[in-house]
Amino acid sequence: MAIYRKKYTKPIPDNAIIVTQNGRRLAEWKTKHGKRKSAEVTPDGTRIRLESSTWFIRFRDGEDQLQDISTGCKDKQSAASMLADQLALADKVRAKIVTNDELKISEQGKRLLDSHIAEFIEYQQAKKTHASRVKAYETRLTESARGCGWLFLSDLSADELDRWLAAQTENERQMGPSVYNGFVEAWSAFGNWCIGKRTKGKRQFESNVRRMTINPFDKFPKLDVNQDRRRKAKALNEDELLRLIEAAKNRPLEDAMTVRRGPNQGQKTIKLSDQRIRELTQLGQERALIYKTAILTGLRMNELRTLQVMDISFGDVPFVRLQAAKEKNRQGSSVPLRRDLAYELSQWTKGKERTNLVFNVPAGILKIMNRDLLAAKIDKQDADGSVIHFHALRHSLGTHLSRAGVAPRTAQALMRHSNINLTMNTYTDSRLLDKASAIESIDILRPELAPTLAPLLAPPPVQSCPNGSNPVHSEGPQASTPKTQKPCNSLENAGFSEVGGRELESPTSTMSTLDSTNSFSTNSRKNEDQQQRLHQILHLIQTLDNNSLMIVILGVLRHLDIPHAFSELSRLYKPTEKQPMD
Image (cartoon, rainbow, N blue to C red; front, side, top):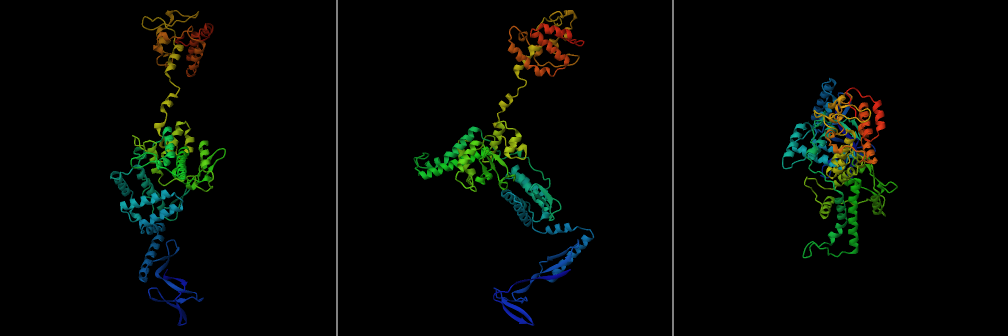
C-alpha cells in the first residue's frame, strides 16, 4: 500500500528559461496569471517532470487485486484516511462479510442519478437503438425522476413511480395508457441495464458492470391499451383513398391559383408561370405517390422518408428492399410492389441517382395530410373517436388485406408484424369488413334445405289412429295390416325418435309438423329435382348408423317409384325388434 502523487511529463513551455541548481537542470517560467513556476527537465532536455496536485493510493482489495485510485484529495492526511477505509473494506471481503461486487455497487450508488441516465443513453446510442426511442427514453426518465424527486440510484422505487404515474392519469394531463406504458418500459429497460443485463440483437448476456443488485421495476404492470385507446386509427375505405390521392395530386396547384382575400376570394384566378405550374404539378404527383406507396406497401413514415432509389427492384417480381438500419424491426425486409405501383415508381425515379431519395417527405407531412383530408371532404375523426393520420394508411392496408380474403399469416408477413394479433386486431378496422357477405358465405343450415329434405324422408300422409297417432301403411306384398302395427312408434309421429333401440333426432326440426301438401309426388317432380334432393341428403346419411341408413334408402327408393328394388331390399332387410320401417 502507498500514498503518492502521480508523476507525468509535458513539453517545456515556450517562455521557460533553463537554469542549473545543485547539479539539476530546471525550467522556470511564468503562467498566464503571472505566477512563477519551475520543474525539473528530463535528460533529453525536451520535456519537464511534474506531479499531480492530488494524492493517489495503492492497495490490494479483498480479491487480492492491486488497485490504484485517485483520492481527489490535496491533503495527504485525508488521502491516508481514504486508504484506511479501503483496507478495512478489503478485510471485510476477505472475511466474507460483504462481496466485492457489493462494494462496487455501493460506490456506484454514490453517483448522481443523472450521470447514470446519461451513460444509459450513450449505451443505447452505441447499440444503434432507433433515435426516436432513445429520445423517448431520455425524456421520460428525466421527467419522471424529477417528478419523483430521485437523486441517487438508492432512491428508485416502484411504489413512487406507481404513485407518480397514477397522478398523471388523473390530473389535467390525462395521460393515456400508451404513454403510461412508455414510462414503464423506459424504467424497466434502465433497471435491467443497471443490474448488468445487456442485449445484442436478440441475444442477452450479463455485463461485469453492475450498479444495482435488483431491478426495482421488474414486472411493473402495464395498462391495457385496448381498454382506453386515445388515438385509434381509422382505416379508409376505397372511395376515401381515391379522394385523398386525387386531392393530394391537385391541391398544390389549386391552392396556388386560389385567391385568399378580397372580392374574388375562393376563385382560381391567379396567373402562374409555366415553370411554377410544372413545379406545383410535380409536387402534387409526388404527394399522391407517397400516399399510394404507403397504402399499398404499409411502409412507415420514416421508412418512406429514407427510401433510396437503389432500394427498389423493378425486375419480374418488383419489390422494395428495406435497409435493416432504417427499418423498425431491423430485419431488412423485402416488400412486394403491385405492378401498377412499380410502374409509377419506375417513371418517378427515372433519371435519379441510385443513392438519391425516392421521395421528399416533408417534416410537416401530418399537417399537409390534414389539409388534403379537408380538400377531399373526409372527416379526420369519426363519431367513435377514430382518427385518420399518416399511420392510418398502414392500418388501411391491413384492413383491405382482410377484406380481400388474404390468409392471416400472409397478411402478417406483408405487414411485417411479429404478432398475428397486431395484424388481425390492431391493424384491421372491423367496421370496413363485409360482415354481411361473410355470414352469407356460410353454406350451412340454410332455410331452403329443410323443405327439400323433409318430404324425402317423411312417410306419406295417412289417416290418424283413434288415439291420435298414425298407423304405418306399407305398399306391395310385404304390407302389414293395421292390427300388427305399433302406431305410436310410426316414423311420422316418432320423428325417428326410436330407431334400432336408440334415440335419433330428426334431421330437421320441422319434419314432424310438415303439412301433407309438402309430400313428395313423383308425378309432379322432374328427374333433375330428384337428383338435386338426393345430393342434398348425402351429408346427412353419412352420419347415420346402419339401421337408420337402410330406412333412409328404403324410403328414397319407395318415393322414387322403384317398387322392384324397394320390395327386394325390404325382403332382405330384417329390422330389429320394435324397428319401424316404411
